[in-house]
Amino acid sequence: MYKAPRGTSDILPEEQGYFRYIEERAAELCRLYGYERIDTPVFEDARLFIRTIGPGTDIVEKETYSFEDRSGQAMTLRPEGTAPICRAYLEHGMHNLPQPVRLYYIASIFRYERPQKGRYRQHQQFGFEALGDADPALDAEVIDMAWRFFDRIGLSHLCLQLNSIGCKLCRPHYLEELKVHYSAYGDRLCPDCKARLLRNPLRLLDCKKPSCQGVAQSAPRSVDYLCPECGEHFESVLRYLFLLGIPFEKNHRLVRGLDYYTRTVFEIQPKGEAGAQSALGGGGRYDDLIEELGGRPTPAIGFAAGMERIVLNMKEQGVSPPAPSGSKVFVAYFGDEAKDEAVRLIATLRRTGISAFSSFGDRSLKAQLRQADALGASYCLILSEEEVKTGTAMLRDMAKGEQRRVSMGDVVGQLQKENH
Ligand code: HAM
Image (tube, rainbow, N blue to C red):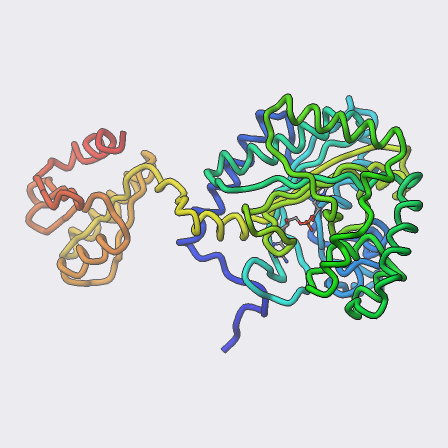
């Protein structure tokens, strides 16, 4: 027996409502904020991700699904959504459009991670990016949009964590200080952190091992090393967030897992569960990324949320997607003539926009009614030879358990009335 690959899962019909609900809330939100949808390929040139996410990151070192295609080109299944958007921005000359260009996506993401609750090898992200503007008001817009998104979904007890990790001018000095601090604790660090100290010191702050957490606690804070421009930018972001009434917590250890970030970084997490594992979404500025890909200097900022984690939180908080609207009609029949009439009637109902179906075959009426109930039909139309002869049918209201005789000519009209 084959099974879905480890870390992946089927989204069964009963789960689909959650995902459609999230997608609808996302599309509504994007319309309000002026973001337009973009879809990029599931795989890209492998170099795009190595270059942007960073060669020393876990994602690039351990988690990409990469393969050589039949022409020998190295390809990678999308491990995140931002780099492909920047590639598309450049490829389609979007710098010629009015800036910032506001885009959103709903996309499958692939990361070879150790599967656990809320962490999968294939997941879906809703993300949005605003490209071509450095204004801190845009940071506030993106953060506000992320915050309001969860509100629209109906999730509560969340907290917004915020930090600034500076730019390529001020960060090197900070990283030096960070290395000095961590070097003093060399023996106490976990093996991963020993490697990070050499290759990616910013990520030291993110280590979840208790032995390293104490070291992170007393580590120098990036906000204390910002250059005047980055400092001013961060102050303005905070001011706009106050203005918009967005509650936030400064988190000096928030650094994110991708290397492209500059200045503002933020995450939204369930309250009291701080830690990357539980983040519902995260984002930040990436002012150098487009230039890194060969474009003109183009500041940008974005955010992405994991849809599976949202569903987990919806279930934990008892938030259900609304039941689908409109009634479903099950057509039950017995006898060959009645079956012909049923086939005709189902087609007519569907053409008029009413969801109608039957189980076909030759089950007893009782079995058919049981099936109608199990399939959640709101009405059942019962056709027998007798009724067909007299041009009538029985219309049964499944919730009330009541039925009445209706003339065939009136069936569609009656059901249309009930449908509204
Ligand atoms: P990220 O923090 O790597 O950021 O992922 C965004 C969100 O995707 C996470 O907060 C989490 O909810 C979800 N997620 C990540 N990995 C997994 C996984 N293995 N299983 C389930 N859910 C997961 C980015 O990807 C950036 N591109 C976000 C961004 C957009 N930054 C700027 N613009």
